[in-house]
Image (cartoon, rainbow, N blue to C red; front, side):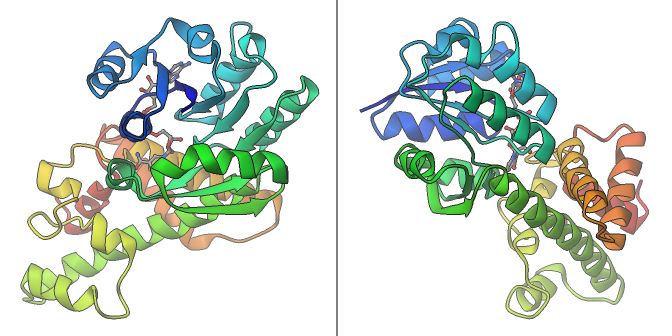
Amino acid sequence: MATIGWIGLGNMGGPMTANLVRAGHTVQGFDLSADAVAAAVAEGVTAVEGIAGAVQGADVVFTMLPKGDHARAVYLGEDGVLAHADTSTLLIDSSTIDIESAAALHEAAAERGFRFVDAPVSGGISGAKAATLTFMIGGEDGAVKEATGFIDPMARNIIPTGGATTGQAAKICNNLMLFINLASTAEGAVLADRLGLDKQVFWDIASVSSGDSWALRTWYPVPGVVDTAASNNDFAPTFTTELANKDIGLAIAAARGTDTPLEIGEHVQQLFQRLIDQGEGGRDCSMIIKLVDGSL
Ligand code: NAD
């Protein structure tokens, strides 16, 4: 069994580490939030002091942080992972971050003699809890193979994507599609209601018809239809609007660099920005339905 360092015990990192503990690994966890640490400790994670404590004696270190800036700070900072870890430690960043930051981490890690992979995930909090996440892993073949063994207790699908940063590229494109699907699901749900359809009847049809999507089956924005949906819980976040806005922004930034028009994606980002401007950035991104039904 391995010693695993973990930095970032939030909505995703918390349940992911719980699954590593269940698999018999020792997990040394660190987060800036005392509440996040306490929740992880209740699941069997060992709380440690700072990044240095998390990487101490670890076979592998995972990071699960909000954005590229956080990941850069955690890896490259004076008191960061590269400064404290032993070069024999495999480094795995599972955060969703911009391609430039991912490239910078690969480069800095390689310069100092570390094996590093970008390994973002898909599947949401429900997938993190159920250990059914999809991991997409970019990096050198040997490091990717090695990472797969540690990732296994958290995953249903582990897909090597190619060289450095291709995991992030896959994740960014996937999430562009997810948030467009979410917006289209909100529009369909509100229109169906206004045309006199029962919410469950419409969902039963769409979920076995061509309007089906992961967003429809997991995040349905109308309460009382799908168990895992934040709409049941007054939009308490399973995926914040801030993070959704970040992810779709990553796609738009990547599109600019490749001369790719993302007209629909840009429009959906404007909707998320409107929610944020109205003070709803910390609530679930499925609140986008409130811009369709006019309640916000
Ligand atoms: P979160 O905000 O719940 O958790 C991030 C954690 O990182 C927080 O607890 C925060 O305190 C901690 N953190 C930030 N800076 C730190 C530092 N310097 N040192 C230690 N801890 C630090 O976010 P999340 O929902 O867990 O998402 C994490 C990443 O996973 C994001 O990149 C997100 O886009 C991605 N993701 C999220 C979901 C989802 O459904 N929530 C799904 C797939 C991928």
